[in-house]
Length: 225
Image 1 (cartoon, rainbow, N blue to C red):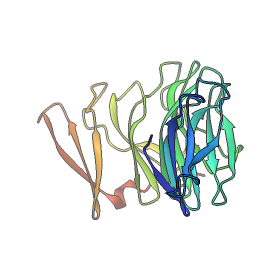
Image 2 (cartoon, rainbow, N blue to C red; image 1 turned 30 degrees about the horizontal axis):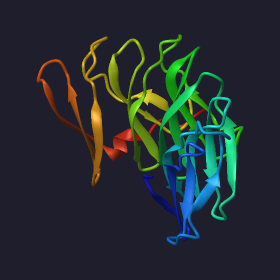
Image 3 (spheres, rainbow, N blue to C red; image 1 turned 180 degrees about the vertical axis):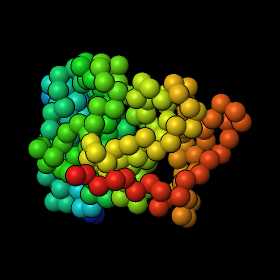
């Protein structure tokens, strides 16, 4: 079982009891209070709950309910609800909480892996921006929360894998810097918040792989029109 996360007075975790497959379980720390929260994908296959994230007064996670990956939520009262089915043949990953908003990557046949966001409602669960046009995808990675914004690395097909920042809108999702100019990739990774700075490692094509830093104030994405 595990990993475990705490919501209210209970812990929540994925586990496989040998009958229902890997599903979401909950416990209050007692034997009698440890139980299957819900069999999201009935039968022995299991829904494979993953990326459990507690934010605000709810728990969100990704799992397959039988028609493809979906975003799910658990309320403070323990009510489990499917927020949105993300689509047949779509795989979701990298669920990250930024305040009350969620970000994650959805790999779809028409877009490839691209950045999505959710405010916890079905209409508010959507593609942020198709950073790389076409079916190849921009492969967003290293999703990191920084003062209400999302810092991540992506490849738009023009600048290579470089650092990007998003406020959850298409207009506010932008390339932060083209560290390795042109189509070369700096491979920016391992974003780490340290005081007023965010450190990461990257290769600008001149100095090899070194430590870089950006001020939090410089991450502020332009507001949507």
